[in-house]
Image (tube, rainbow, N blue to C red; front, top):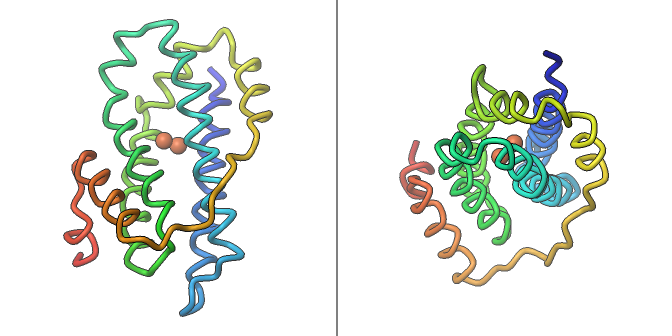
Length: 168
Ligand SMILES: [Fe+2]
Ligand SMILES: [Fe+2]
């Protein structure tokens, strides 16, 4: 089987990883790279949540329901982490979650393989829809403590501790 969906999403992981790495090459976080990372990650999550998962779920809801909850919680945590203005600590936490999350999606027999197999009769149609996904409209980063606390709570729901990660 051609793994076109796997490839599509994995390429996007690499593109986003490079943007984030470029944002932290200088002591000041480079917003000309961080902002496209931020909108790109939200679009990536939207493509998974609104196109890939529903298509796979329509074929075998039970199979998808077994594996999806943790990915959903991590999407919630990553989305909440896109709200506060970035700091080196915040980026350390984002990288930590993404590394684990992307691995679980990409690994052999992981989420992408499961979804690809279930939706194999509609791969091209899904790719067309994915490519057409518009950018997610964004607010500027929110510097209030509320936004930061909300991100910390979303992390806890996904099984992570912000303060523990930044001490690693
Ligand atoms: Fe994901
Ligand atoms: Fe992904």
